[in-house]
Image (cartoon, rainbow, N blue to C red; front, side, top):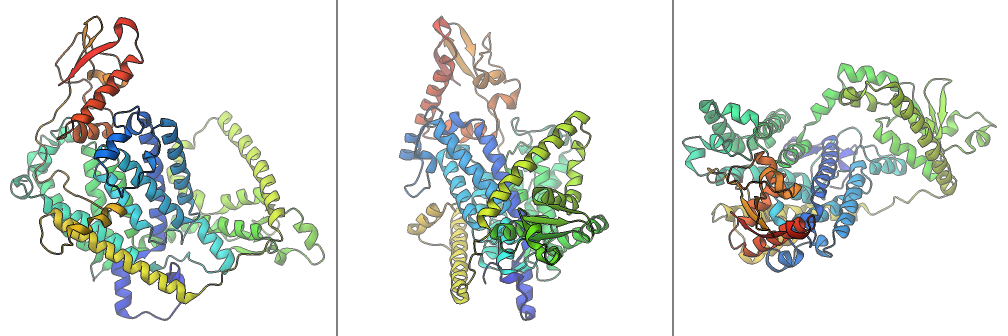
Length: 609
């Protein structure tokens, strides 16, 4: 099946094919929502990582490249970020990654930029593997499977361009079944089910005390967890619910009866589970990734319910008198108007503006005009002003209104400045649009002829490939839990390393952690004055605590930094055979401290306890 076949009108499907599409297929609108969620999550992850860009990814930081390349990476690992150890180069890659995420967000060359984002994600995680946790692993796998999904088939630049070229509409939210949809569903099920097989401790299976132990960890614990620790019976019930739901809840994704309702139950159930986690524990990126992972499984009736709600029906009244017209002689005009219609949910309100220009005045009316928007019988706007008018009359403002309410009460001066800025932007973009229109007026539309047999064969090969990858993942996880079937030979592990689909889902397993830890950095300057360097965010402010103290850090979690610093301490500095990591960590502390002090205030030596 090709990427857009699901949107075409064909023969009536058999009951079996229809049921299989319900069980293992996905809605185009849900996939578009998933695309937007992945792009936003990527941008958020980049912002967070950039705060420690020099410390975590450059040779001046805690984990120089030689250590990664010589000891902690495979030869087949994607390592774009290891090309240079300069922080400026890392910043350049972060910017490129952000631009690729923006292209993915709007759905421009969607599959290409999905692949590019996957490469960046795999590379940045491989550059410093001790910063990663289960959420990062899950995020990387979601990107890999997203390459094989039609993420740009709806609400995207790609769908607008395709509509302009072929007049094929993919806006009706038709469900699609491919190897990619089956593979993504399989990976989500693999993650949750495998996680239950790792939970073999009595804290999960008999005593149900795992949640109580988890919320006793000082770094992870949030105020709600402290409150719930007073109700051990409630925590036992929550532990039992998590353990059972992670396994049995997976079947709700592909139930053969009431499929869509059970799938929505699965989405809400797993979202509620992760919401409970994030309200009680500091888990960083994990919650957001697990939430985005539920987006492609939203069934069609969810979107139909939103679209047909009274609120949206009232909003659609504004669109009844709106028409978007383009110059059929200009490829730029035709494409830009169809792209705009795709984003503004005005798919059926598009046409060539020859049809509204009176006989004999066509050439004059079209002169310098690349977009014509008609709101009422007599009210029209052209070019950039027309695009702004189309936005105002579309369904986007009503959809964004619930999220924009905190920002509505702006001061009059801010509003005036915003209006002036919009006018200036409209004038600039209008000039750009006019220039592009003149440049593209006579350019022919791209040819869309291609061999359907060739496309079909490519799609089938892609389905077979991705389903084979699913079997590799099943085999890999079977080895993780000690199962003897299905298992592939160890010699095939290179496939998982090359594609970055190696995985392990043993979080808080087989037993939850039962002790917490903190560092004491006993330091002396050149005058042999003793001070402590971990307490009170000492490794970030580089101001030692005097007099020296062995007390628990205050504030506790802030002294560690964010969750990536905590993982580096936990998996790197505290790990086995980590002498070189600790050595480079010590060198980093000396460099950073002494760069800020001179003379006898410089750090002479320290001990890490």
